[in-house]
Image 1 (cartoon, rainbow, N blue to C red):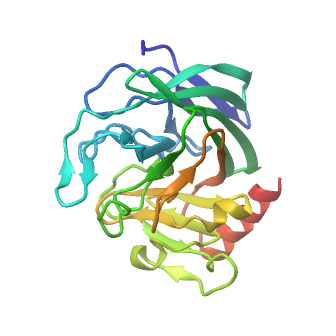
Image 2: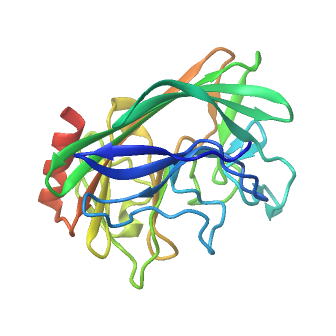
Length: 288
């Protein structure tokens, strides 16, 4: 991949994100398109890329640590019985082109390749919508179709033997600050008590989860019934990040020609929202 200028995403007349389609080569990164920086309407950064603690974290995007044994996440690969291991198994998400591009969003086609083989075709839709004078929503939908001609499966460190590490799918790396962000979530999908704290929210299939930092709040919501079934992967104390878990207890099977679709809508707000404010903005974002 050769670097090219980022695509600008605008909302309410302001630049709120930049999208890098062809990042330059970097060791152990599993090159892939990503959004960064993402900001609030007031211009406060709410994403991070290539941080010192996890240099393979690239802003906001889609990544999986194990697709048929290939690493599309970056960094080391968790191997059962061995732990994290540096392997020469990194795949590439190649930007093939935009099928639609407007100031407030785009539709992109990508190829997920490894070892010279195209495994998945992805259609990614990204859209920015204004909610209030201090909040906007980022809608990210990805559709992964198995074009390899054989059955594939998606795994995670959890399915490979590392408890609590079922990351893979949508992922948002937030900026690390002096204090860890507050974490809270809605009731579990299908009904259940509200949750507070990283331990309570991590691994839950909640309707939405929130990170509240220094002058900003991110609220992540599954926008379809199938997306809401995926548990959330949440980190706050070690580093701030939220993602989906496509493979928590078992590998996600993707038959030849089969397609996996997920949609996550993220409220990006200035200030620290409380639970009621977060819930109200999620309702507006998901139905708008």
